[in-house]
Length: 146
Image 1 (cartoon, rainbow, N blue to C red):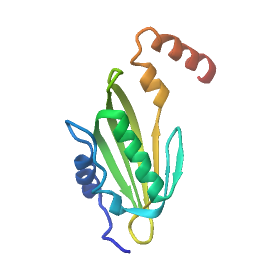
Image 2: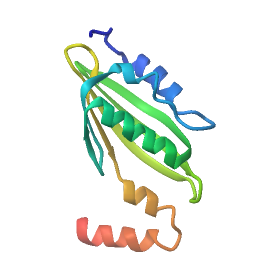
Image 3: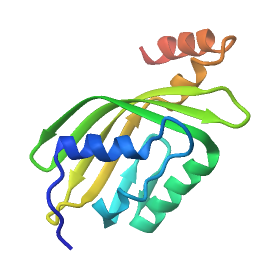
Image 4: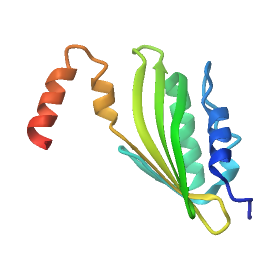
């Protein structure tokens, strides 16, 4: 199955339809752009296969009351698109969490996404939202990691 190559404008349009300003995200319109053998990886997991990727997206939808993403910059080089984002996750029982990260999409020969790698500091962004914990966490990170 070949599709037309996605441009940075296509990614901005498609991802802006995914993350709603109100309500739960909906990825259904972007799933056709993913290859059956997609490899997704982020700081906590590695998923192989489109069915497992869809299940991952469904789990995130169930956990969040609302999920928003703003893409601040985007670039393309050959068969890769890289974009920087700010995400706000709103949960049922916990305060909203702000996360900053980047995503690298790699396209296969059929122009579908064959690899997606998300980069973010999950714990740092979460711990920054806990008033009594963020300073000791940052002090620990600075002391042991730089």
